[in-house]
Image (cartoon, rainbow, N blue to C red; front, side):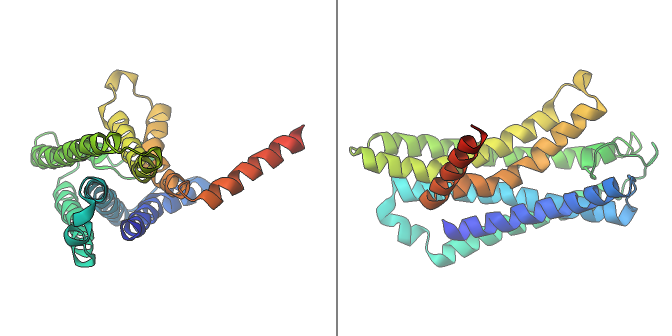
Length: 255
């Protein structure tokens, strides 16, 4: 579990570092400019890291399933070599996904100017600038990717259905609490990741506005990676005790 959390932390750190430093620099210098090469690099690295994170969350669902539903086979099914191979597959899938989409998107001719409204480069907004007859192949590739990501989502849901069925059959309350404490942080991260992405990409165009688009973009690109460490660290009892004491101290100081 901690090996996968290490990889998740690296992906979170990388995805935030891809977009926030440039956005902060633009804010400080009161500019919205980014070079064509910089935009391509930003699209590539963000896709690489965010898609790799999604595949890693899928792998972590399988890790939780084996740990709870087949605990006696855990060492056989998820040895150190298998964990390394699955993590490498998640990173490699993200890399391949980023290469295909970045190369396909930035080979399109732009006919609608060069102004992007979000605070970082995203493929859907770049496609709006492309010639109307030329972006169909990228849309077809996006549909294939969406089907693959939906398959991962179904796998996660089925895994957790089996997990909760197994947990509810555990006779001791302590055993159920331990199993839930291991699964709920991962489930919270997956739910936050998927729900924010769905809100960002499937919202109705009629309610779109520059301010709302900015809020939604920050919601799915910044909030999940920023909250992941907090969600997982809450499993640490010492950290929870420290946060509780801090809250009590602040409340007592105000009174």
